[in-house]
Image 1 (tube, rainbow, N blue to C red):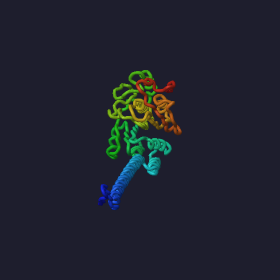
Image 2 (image 1 turned 180 degrees about the horizontal axis):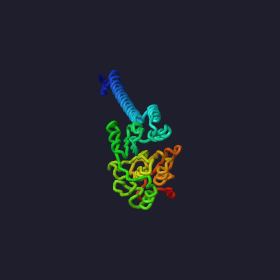
Image 3 (image 1 turned 30 degrees about the horizontal axis):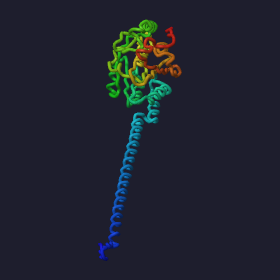
Image 4 (image 1 turned 30 degrees about the vertical axis):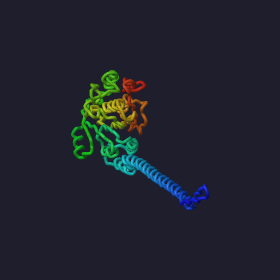
Length: 313
């Protein structure tokens, strides 16, 4: 509100004090509103950021926990493993493995990345044990007795077993070793697909899919080999060496175990096709553990061992 005072020719305009106060109050209201809006915006930003951080953290922890749980889920508890080994080693069979040898293979199985591909030559008293220890992997058994293989599969449907016809004889050991040396650059190459090979000592009648798998562990505990006309394990050991060297992927090295290593056929064949430089350990001459590395076509694919051959005498 304004008052006009007429003082001669001069007009004096007076502003009432409450008008000035009203203008200051308006500016104060706007200032308070601006501060309030800024405070609310800051609070909302803080809440959103906190929730996002919490969600991200929970998701990360959940992911790590799930991964750890999945990894642990693929490994049998140590107590279960020990129990299986104990009862397998104390069976009443006269040809079972010792607990020391079983544990050596079991330790490697426990360290094998899942899923683990495990190839076993021979259906033995430990067959159910090997399949159980590799419960999240693939375990395949090869045996020379088609009737026993069919019986095992019928009685234990969880077992994957195939029969194969061996054409070798223990009495032919020297001849077979010589033939491999002569054909090492042709049919008996260390790196090849045996499905298409005519190497006399190689196994080329396994199911086709088995030649395509990258085997992590191979155990040679068959066929039978304790009389001159028996098939012996020359072919199984040779085939294991070729499969290990011919891998296309997976781990670079394959664990190859040979049971009954004290016998001549097993020892000579292993030194010839698995090689001394790859020997990790031998247990009282009963179980030999080799680690054979895959070889590329550009690598040393025409020689089994770096060292000289061991004469089969």
